Image 1 (cartoon, rainbow, N blue to C red):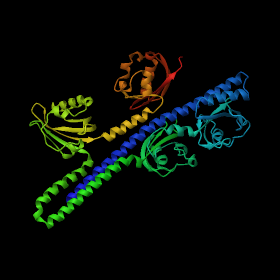
Image 2 (image 1 turned 90 degrees about the vertical axis):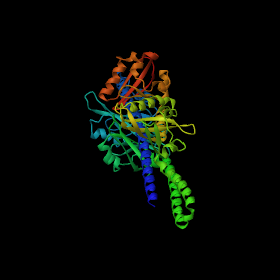
Image 3 (image 1 turned 60 degrees about the horizontal axis):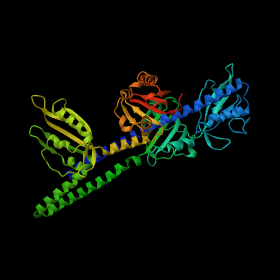
Image 4 (image 1 turned 120 degrees about the horizontal axis):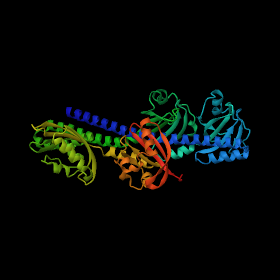
Length: 539
């Protein structure tokens, strides 16, 4: 009975550890998506603000030239409104809140004085760019977000506002391409908790005040980013959430959620199988105990059944997915726990092995690193070691293994006499990382990321296509070593400045190796720098 309790406790502990790992993997995935959504949303808001400023400048030029009228103003507003897909219309309101000019026809003179986005400028005259909370259009009945900027007379007094109607469904369409799995959600809200837009779209919650939710009441005031698990305030679904405050627009927060049921589905399948095996083994042991009490003469048969039961019990403990190995270098004797063999589908044995036999099953691409690491430990260069490598399974496939260990004893010359280590199957984690990379590859702009030493850590297909290499060609390479002709130029200086100041930067630059002009967006962080770029006409 004690054995059953101990094995059950070990199984529960192993399953709990696996569950925590599954949740952590989900949190890392949602955090990656939140970073991408933050950058996309920031660029969208910046684009709207730029269009408002350009349209305002165009109207001012018409007025200075004496050519400003309803028709010329409408042409300017349509030109800038139609240049971006998420702006439905643009209009100008005078200081009393009446529509003065409009990209659409038939609305001149209508009063929108009561609109919250207009009242902000009346109550707070120093307000600049403003992205208002959702309102229903009086003309179409659809939800819209009013992005606006103030207009001033030559003497500096308030002269009205210019407004762009941003359509939330556009974001629902763009965010819908992000694969968060069944039940996933993406939302943009104000810092105070007012829901601005959400994917999937739920019409009745547009503009809903979620300010009492812990994320807005407690977490956002403490930190600009984070993660948590909670039931959604919109549909009640429990999700793994990651949130990020927009660095350029700190009044707004993006919240990305992955349904916990989806994130934990693989773990639940594993837990069910492990629990059934453990239950079967436990029932078998109980049955054997009763039979041994009643039939001492069948002790030989009971011994065989006990060995079979022990094998079944070992299957239950495999849920921990940790194999321990011990290598006595002085006698060249090697042994391991049963779980060690089960991880790669091997028959349990205690064969002697040398380093070449150890390395033979390591994937060719990982073999040099593993060989170098083990030889360094054996030579006494360091005591502890850790590596991740692909090792061939008995069925011929390769599984990712995380191996950690240390030298337990050394001889007089400092060389290791005995190594003890553990390995864990991390294939699921690697597959989750690959899923994250695939999600980043779906970003349509050319996208590259670098670590603080300017080594390339990720390149999506669009960037690789523009630069004329396969994505794998860039990984791990120092960018300035591969493109030394850029060192000292404006683009190089801008990258260094962005990393030093930790501030985003935008610029257009000529890329001599490809004889092309690019529009570049630099987004630094303590972990490195992200570069978005796209072709633009020659300048």
